[in-house]
Length: 489
Image (cartoon, rainbow, N blue to C red; front, side):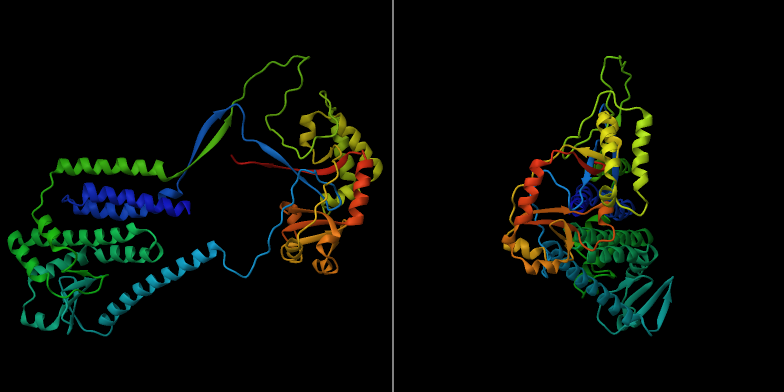
């Protein structure tokens, strides 16, 4: 949505610059270039990203993620999150997308319809070669118009010789300068950018500028401004042709009559072209995306023996406090022993949940002892950590609506009393049978090979009471897996 809004604002700014400073100036070739490039630029500028380096003494932070197995206890301040299952109704985003697609298809059909009509006028028809153009004679009473290399003329008028040479020169200019390509591009863009009102204004401005260019071609050849102006007035009352063709009778003839005799000095043209560059620069910095990238400043600080160890610049946020810890930390040999104990049980096929359950009690005690001798920096670098015991989770009874949502196996995986069960198992219970519910969202490795997105841990009334009593009595530390990831600012 931000991108779409920026497209509208950016194209609006560019068109306003054209309307105020360029449209009334006789520099048609530059204006053609400006209209096409500024329209394309309005689509690109919002995609431009700038990384602005900012020196700060504290770099971007990282945080710790603790991933808990179904049987482990979570802190009491984690609130219950109920995720509603997807319903067979369109969301607001899906509805808007549907409307967008339907309108785009409508415009594409109109675009294709016009092309088909033009193609039907060309297919199988004989044509005359005229100074690089292909003249198609038709019985329809239409004003002369062109499309790509084709010029469409009324057969009767052509055979009577009533089509002026200036008119043919006008259409040949459209052909030689490839004006049809500009029109096709903007008409095709309308099908997808119809929500942007400025795309329609761009289309009108581009076609009008084509007429200025074609008029200029006629004047340069015949050098008779007054005669050509009378000819324009004479032809304005005739029937128009298709919107995507270059037509002699197009838009407001009054503007064309004025611009034929208009003069723009080279100095004014140069100043206004420079002004365009300024607005392009403003647009880049106004509508592009900018990100602050913090750069760490390394400062040398003397550390005395009495000073506590300097913490790493990475800051850690914890679910709970680490169990134990010292300022001195442990020697590298003990850190190696800590890792060796983990490696004795942990295999590549075993995830961290399985490891925490499989590690022998003697190894667990040794790991706990070493961990409690580490300093905070060493503890933050470990994958297996020990936390102080948590208080029991508070009693939480799901509502009937929440309980029904848990039966959707495409969204929720269900554990009852620390055992994985099928979602259909909930049909044997009612919501009031449970005294505690905790929902966690799966991510990273925890999501691998699982068809659901959320894990629901539920305790029945009796089981919760036993758990509560056990937790109150158990003062042992908790061994958990600690994940680490960077946080964007």
